[in-house]
Image 1 (cartoon, rainbow, N blue to C red):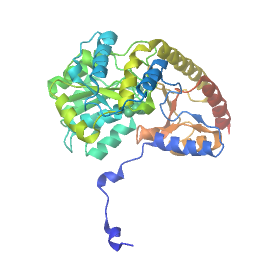
Image 2: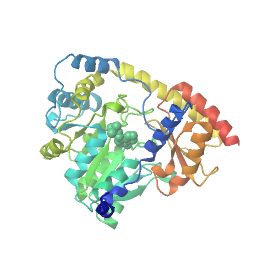
Image 3: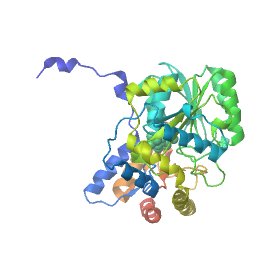
Image 4: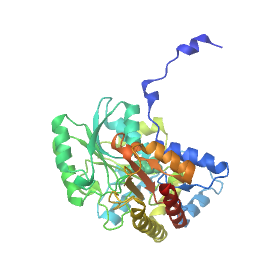
Length: 390
Ligand SMILES: Cc1ncc(COP(=O)(O)O)c(C=O)c1O
C-alpha cells in the first residue's frame, strides 16, 4: 500500500452537503428491493410517463442513424421550438439565439453560475428553498444570502427585501423560483416586475428558475422574460413535461451570454443528451396529455389538503403551484430528520425533512411531494394516521 496516499487531501468542496431528498430516495429504494412497500413522497418526480409524442419521437430517432453530439447550445430546431413556446405561452418574443439546451435545469445552473459569478460572489435565495442551490454554491465557492419567507410575507420575496439585502451588503445575484420548492408559493406578476426592475437598477444578476411553470392551480405563472431581457431564465422538461430522467432543460440568456454559455458547455458537457433534445421538441405539443396529468396532481393536492389537517398537520405553506406540501411538524418533533427516518422505517412513507430546505427552521418541517399516484396519497394518509397516533 502506498503510505503517501494517507496524506492526500480532497478539495474543500468535498464537504458538499448531501441533497437529503436524494439520500432518502436511495434508502427507500433499498427497502423496496428488500421487499418493503414504500409510498414515495420524497422527490419531486412525476409518476406518469412522458407524453406519447415524446416517446414516439425518441423511438423514431433510434431507427439506426447515429445519435451523435449536437452543437454545444443544442439542436437549432429545439431552440426555435423553445423560443416559440415563449410566444405561445406568455406572448413574449425570444430570439432562439438566446436559448441554450442543458442537461436538466441542474446543468443550466452550473453553466449560468460559472458564467456570471466569481468565487466569493453573493447570491440571494429564498429560505426555505431548493437544497441544490445552496449545495452548488458551496461547490463553486459562492455565498448564499438568505431571504427568509414565511407566512408573514405569504412565502414570497418582495422587491423591498431584495433591495434591503443589497443595501446591507452588495449582492451579485438573485436566484428566485416561482412556483417555489418546497412551499409551492408563487410570486405575483407585479412583484416579479418590481424585482426585475430592482435587479436592473442595482446591477444584480436576476436568475429566474421557472421549472414549475405549467404546474399552477389558480393563476398562471409569469416569466421574468416578460419584464426584462437581462434576466437568465432557467427551465426544464423534468416537471410539467414528466421527463426527469431524460436530463434535459434550457436557459434563456441576455444577448451577450450565449457565446459564453457555448464555450462553457463545449468543455463541460459538449452538448445536452441528443435523444432527449429530439424527444423534448414534441413535449410542447402534448398539452392535452400533460393537463390530464396535472388534473391528477390537483386531485392529490385536494386529498391531502383535506386529510392532513385532521391528522394535526394543519400549518401548510400556500401550495399555489408545483407538487409539494410543506408542513409544520413542531407539534410532533423538533428533529425532522429523525421524524422522517421513523416515518420511512415504521410507516413506509418516504418524505423529506425540512432541514434539506431550511437548515435551521426546517428541523420543525416536512415536505411531501404529491406528484405520485392518487392511490399513493390515500395510502399515505392511512399510514400517516396510524403513525401519528402512536
Ligand atoms: C426548484 C428546482 N429547480 C431545479 C430542479 C432540478 O431539476 P432538473 O435538473 O431535473 O431540471 C428542481 C428539482 O427538483 C427544483 O425543484
